[in-house]
Length: 162
Image (cartoon, rainbow, N blue to C red; front, side, top):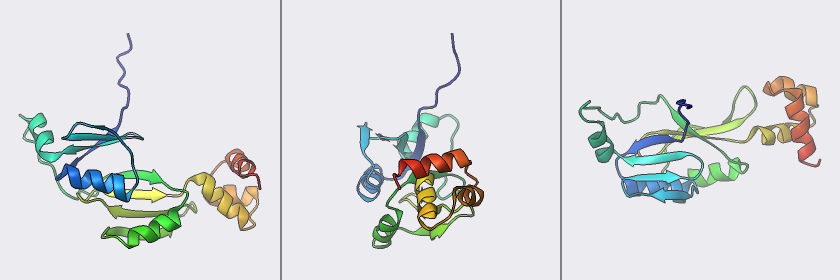
């Protein structure tokens, strides 16, 4: 018998389930997998849980749910990161930081969801490799600047057909 736990999803606690469901569904384009009213699971492995219900489940520990702990984030990727960034700028999203390039050359942005959870959206590393290849860098230069293995870089360049 295997008693090792199997990871299922990340679950974040929210003040208003409808507001958060609309944010993830309508602003970030996530698909609802299951909606139990006080708990909503999205495709891709994350869920939101109504704070009142979550705290009832935690009793008798008297767990206090904190807003904006800034100690975790939900990470997403998008091949259309620039257009998504422009679209998010037109909303009331509060950015932690604007779209920027990380030391490994990946472009990312971070912002808060309606409950103060940090959301990071980055471009897939395959897209980073292709962008750098299109700019004229060699496989070894891309590998060195992204810390990605040369085999990954070669495969990403070949799969793009360029």
